[in-house]
Length: 258
Image (cartoon, rainbow, N blue to C red; front, side, top):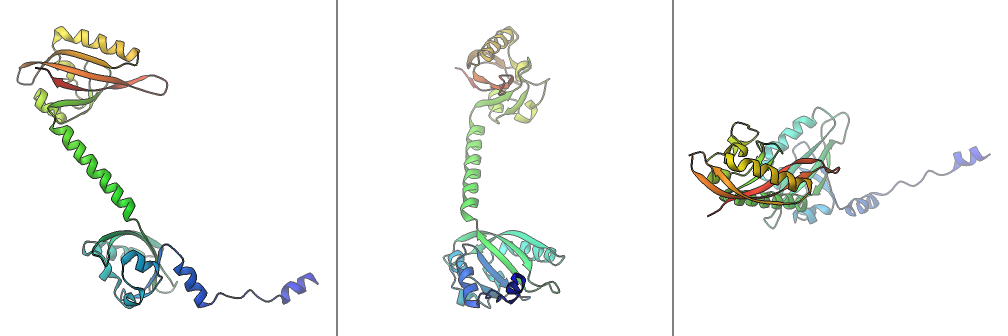
């Protein structure tokens, strides 16, 4: 009897078109359908929030008209890949009605199994994330440029008698006459080879004491430049340690003293 009741139970009502659009318009991502001529067949209200263009004015318009010209090649490439099946993810720039550039992430797929078109896609605005990354990159470039212009040598080295360099700033050339490239991971040209022989043992011993105590060091010694000139420098630094306290290296900054 229970089986019969379930069999006679009316099927749940299917959502109406109005209800489906109400659902789509409540989303914070753009949902869009595109035909074989790249025209916008349908799009939800988030499109207007993302691009500044009204939905009604955008329908039947070519989707590529809203793309940044430099991204048209990427768009075409993704379409070619999509024709082989599956779905595709693309990042591109949309031209906002205000003239601003909006970075977007779009996932494209075919709406039919027997035909490439029409296409459906979801699109989200990732401009804040991209902008933050661009700001960080620009800040890093500015900081690196500042470091490279300083007549100083910022370094990270191994804890050996050669003080083999794992990182050295471009300012080392102003200080020592050697380029950063010539000092990295070298033993025949190293900080150790430039320290005056009469100062080398003292520098080594004082750094080892500081490393053992996990303290900073502040040293003055003589250094010989690539041209043979002898200068006095100040070397201030500290050790790098693992979580177990093992010494991983030394980092610091070397400046010329008057």
